[in-house]
Image (cartoon, rainbow, N blue to C red; front, side):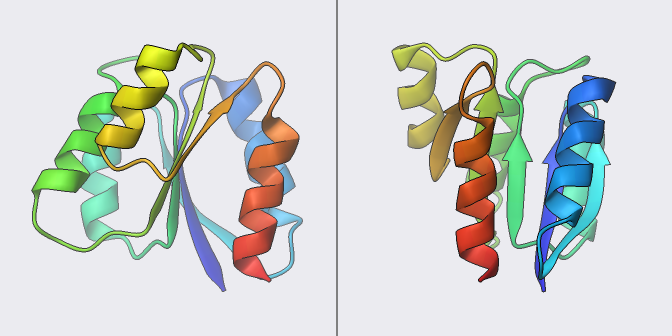
Length: 121
């Protein structure tokens, strides 16, 4: 079972993602967070294989989450960024902070879901 954790502060997007991900065979959404601090707390407590990270959060941002995961010395799973801020500079920064892939919310949701499906297969 592929365990996915979601960091997304927009309720509608979060609901769609959770429903879509849970419909994939061998995928379990193990939790979600709306803020940077909640995400960091839960990610360190839960077992997860994939985290989907939004950059702009209600409190804090996903770049700090990525940086924290990169520097705390523990081995973590796959990190996928899913954002409404698809600039090349932000993409490069995310990848430098350990993101494995970067997806634009405006037109790459299917690509994100396909990536998760491939990992769950």
